Image (cartoon, rainbow, N blue to C red; front, side):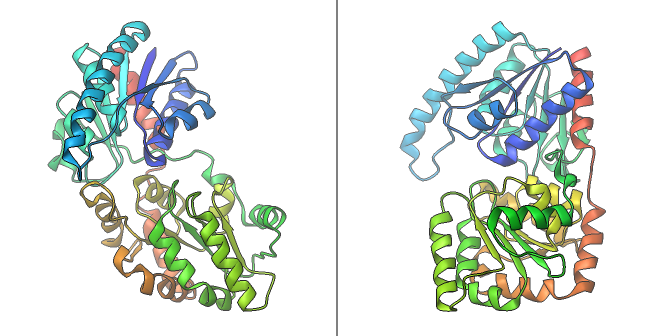
Length: 374
């Protein structure tokens, strides 16, 4: 069996794609998998790190502000489609899997035209442009939210949830304490509450600015904080933290500031409360692990889909929402109030856990195999 998987641009597309590939390998160790991504994007680095080959296309997204630049975008899309034709003739896939992103549009459109059955995986509660464009070409569409009939043909839909990184449940609070104390030189303990702040694979400016503006309150609260800033914001955030510690005349802090958390299972294991953007992968991880969370939807995404993702949880009392425009003044006070309220933490943990779909990657892989056999 040969499977062509395409998509990327962000961790929210890459992690599910790799999880599906891993599940396929478990079900059929002999299957061959080839990824198709966009040149210069995250997938060109992360996919090979996961052990899979990838081919890059000269494809890029539409420029919604400078419309005239889309002439070049269209030319690159046509070039990419020609390249995909060559890839499919050489690789001869039995099935194609599209997870969203620029490359997926070109790769899956050509694959469908060449007679390859297509499966789409839509992570969000508001369907992305690429998958909506491909809905008539797909044989099956795996979704993470109910009510997706407003975007896709109902007879093609399968509710599978979103695949997440498979080792997320491996951490324990005790292992986490040892790891963070040894790695960052802090003195964390299981006796104090821990706040985990994550802004996605690239970081989140609003969340970082909100934390910087309220560092004194966080330090004074006595809670432990693991603050993932993203690489673009790390130096600025680290400087702000050091400046605050200097002002308070203290060297030891209960705050870890890092650009990237390599041991997410340990970070999640220790966290009593998580502050996060509302990307589909992040929400799926929070559901799987049953973590109380404050969601700050990014306003800089297509069709405000992160707000739709977050509201699916908020309506079930499974998360707290703080709007991006209100985060500077409300985010940290809300977090400090919530993390001190054991009853509300327990309620959120219970409710979000009921929304988890824990076997998503395997379910999707089974559907891929069914299409390949047909």
